[in-house]
Every structure is written in structure tokens, then in C-alpha cells.
Length: 393
Image (cartoon, rainbow, N blue to C red; front, top):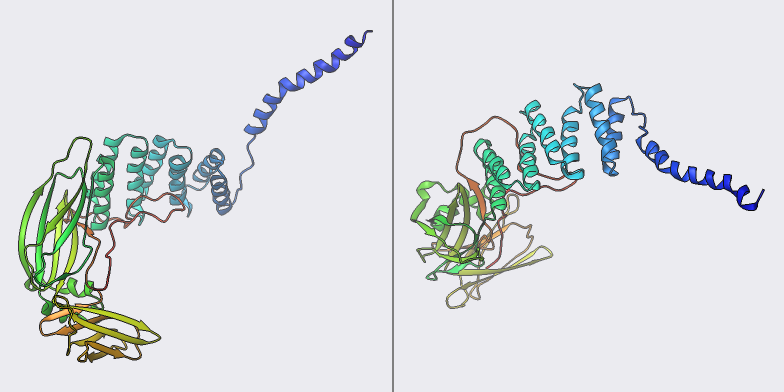
């Protein structure tokens, strides 16, 4: 027998093994691990497989849970995780939508009901079916009982449509100076503006009370009788080709001292900003329990003597008067908003609010849960409206 013929069986054996390896690998891959029989351990196993990226095994385990424990304590969570799994991991958006829909049908009174509705809309959006996403967001905006949820839904629809609307103020103003509100917008064709004026006297009576520890709270407590409607008008906007962004300024139709509340409404969403106009300004510094205040006339920069200064602190308020140099110093400062009052003028370290608060007009309520918007698993969630900024004058 030649050397070549004696090596032939070994070569054939090796070739057979190489050909069999793919089939063996596929067989090993298809082998199913034995699932836990305990309810809680089965959920934990499925969640672990999902977190490790093994979404097929997680899908099998979650479905096994629903089959074995159809009325188990984790049923709602399992439906949600199946929706999340196909939404964020496998990207099978139609399958994800089916699970979220079943979840809404099975748990219509869940506190997370509106979050599930937002997730349904998000699957349409991630599937690039924009019209379907907008339709779903608009349904939420009509049906949700809470203004924050409705606002969020409309703003999510705007995001799909490429719309944007925001109002802000970046300074406080001196009496006699024309106040301005800055508006940023994209693809917004029309905004209804409303401006109202609140005298300082109407705010002062609420400052310092338990429910009025800052300017925001005190303004909110001023009723209709304390607000003077200045003007309501509609602004229309057009855009250049391929440029859908605008930065505009809105003039407030008054220059007298006080607080101005300016609203801008589009598509049922109302943005609100607050401006502060005063004859006086105040600079405050604090360190090691000591408070230093300096009051001055904003138009002349001269110090203001005889201004009453007090802190809005529920337990340890401070009160005093500025001297001839416009200075007031106090010990045992425990924090809180500092305000100064002279005559009918008010000045405060909370002198203006930069960002807009968003809200919606009321709609037909539906007695369900309280979630505000879509969140991806392990994320912190999406906010519904901008915060109020603060600055000293």
C-alpha cells in the first residue's frame, strides 16, 4: 500500500467532521434550556436573558410564563417586557405593537396605561410610519385626562412633523423699558398670544405664606380680579424655502412696574412665560449664615435707602431695612427667597423666569392612569414641559 493510499481514510474522516460541524453547531444552538418552574425565578430568568441580549430565549421564557401563570402577579410586567423586547431589542415593531395593545386592553386602569399608549405610537414612529405615529399621538392628546399627558402627546406629534415652539425671557426689565419675549419656532404657522399684568400689591399678599414661599407660587395664587388683561393677538409666520426655523421677539404692550404673564398658544398647547419689571434692583450674597443685600435704583444705579428686606422662610424669616448706602446685613440666614419692598415696588432675587411652562386646554377626561410619555427600559424618561429658570437681578 502506498503512502498516499494509507492516508486517505484519515483525510476522509477529517473531511466528514468538518462537514458535520455546522450541523452540530446548529443543533447546539437550537437546544432549549430547561426553564425554571417557579413563577418568580422564571421571570428573573427571562429578564436576565433579555438584559444579556439573548432576546429569542427571553421571548420564549416570557411566553412560557404567560402560559403557565396567566393570572400571575407579574403578568402586566411580562406583557410590557415582551413589548419592550421587540421594540428595543429585536426591532420587530409590529410584534411589539401587538403586545402593547394587548397590555392596554388587559390593564386599562393601570397607572402606566398612558405610557403603554405612548409606546404604541413610538413603534409606528420607529417603523418610519409617520402618519400612523402622528395619528396615535393625536388620539392620546384627545383622550388623556391630564394636561401634562395631553401636552406631551401633542409635542411628540410635533416632533414627528418637524414642528418646534418655545418661549423664553433672558433678563428682567426696568420700569419704562419695553419688555421682550423671545420665541423659537419651526414649521409653526400661527400663534395666539395673550399678555396680562399683575401689580406687585396683588403678589405681596401671597408671598411668605405656607403655600407661597417663592414668586412662582405667589403669582399662581393671584386670581382673575388681580390680573389685568392687556392684549390678545394672533401672529402668523411664513418660511423661506429649505429654512423652517425662526427666532422672533414678541413685544409686551406695557412698560409699567409689575409682573407680566405672556402666553402663546398653538395647536391647543399653551406656553407661558413670566417677566419681572421693577424700578429697583437688588444684589444678595450669603455666606456662613450671613446675608448681605444691596438695593439700587435700576435707572440711576443710586443706592436705595429705606427698602424693607425680608426672607421667605417658613420657620426663620428675616426682616430689616436698608441703610443710606442701600445695604442690609443680617445674621442667622437660613435660606429662602429674598424680597425688597419700597412703596408699591417689589424686588426679589427670583426676578424673572426664563423657560416656558407648557399646558393644554381641557378636554374630555377619561378615568385611567397617570404616565406622561414613552420611556425606553432603564432610561430616565421624557419630560413633558420646560422648567422655570431663575436668576437674580
